[in-house]
Amino acid sequence: MPIDTSWLLEDRVMLIEMSGDLSLDDMRQGTLYSLDALNKTNHQIHQIIDLSQVKSLPNNIAEFAKIAQPANEHEMMGWVIVYGVQNKLIKFIATMTGHISKTQLKIVDSQAEAIDVLKRIEVLLADDFNI
Image 1: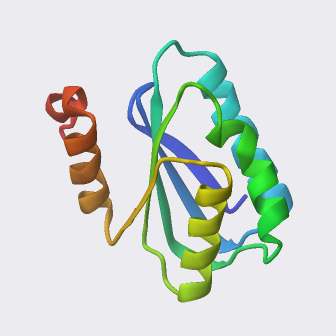
Image 2: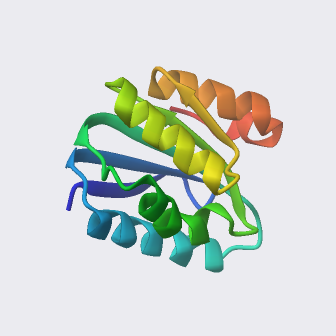
C-alpha cells in the first residue's frame, strides 16, 4: 500500500508517508487507520504527512475530501502538517481538501520544519520530541 503510518510520538503525533500514485481506495484505508487511532484516544492527535514520494493524487477533489472528512473533522484531530509537496497540483489538492473539511492545515518544506511548527503550536509537545 502506498501509505505507511507510524508514530513519531506515540499516541500524539502520527507520521503518514505516502508514495506513488495514490488511489481513492488507498485514501480510504489511510482514513480508516486514522479513525481507529482517533476513536481510541481522549486527546488530540496531530498528523505529519510526507508527500515527497507521491506521483499523483486522485483528481476528484470532492471525493478525496469526502473520504478524508470523517478523520479531519473528528473532535480528536489536531493539526495536519504536510511536507514534501512536489508539484502545484498536489499542493492545490491538499490545500483544497483541508479547506473543504475545515482542517487545521499547514504546508511546509521538510519533516524538520513540520516538527518545529508543531512544537510551536502545541507547546506541551516540545519537550517530548527527541528526534
